Image 1 (cartoon, rainbow, N blue to C red):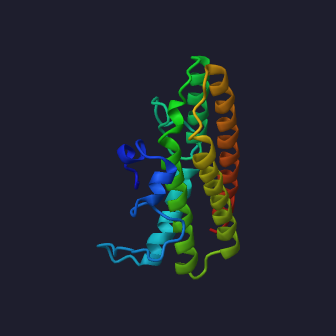
Image 2: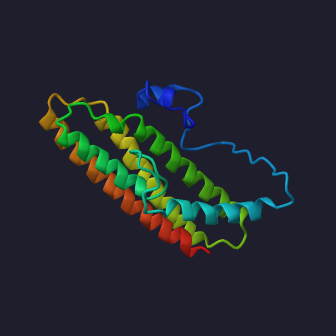
Image 3: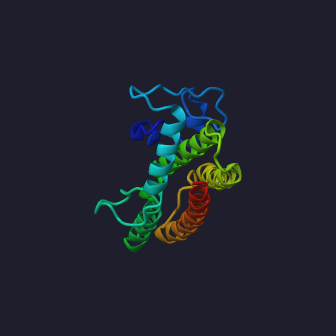
Length: 190
């Protein structure tokens, strides 16, 4: 919940949805805290859109640590970790949980931010941002299905775990494609 790995690592998706602090898809209220500088909210949104796009578009490894990196590279790192687990014939799929919850939360926040920008920035290309939002919405749906249907099923042996990891790799590759499409549309707005 809100990047709290300790809470995320001990709860199932069903349990998380029952916690009042869990981020639901449809927020009734979002607060924007005024900055100390004299920049307007619109200027800060524009700046954050550009910085966010740069960060999320990263395709280079930023660290030697597994599952560390910002942007599209995280999908590559994640798939590599799944392959390593398969090569070690591990039954437990360690790198999907709680990472999938954290991934979900991050994409939910991005989608919500894009929606805010669409409503706050008067000259923004709404169709491009709506395209990006729809791609993040699809990523969220894929993650929800994975958390609800796949994560709870524990493999019985290393072979079954390997098959499940291949499915996860396919899911991550599809999510990467969707995020690339979202970032392309997002970049076209400027």
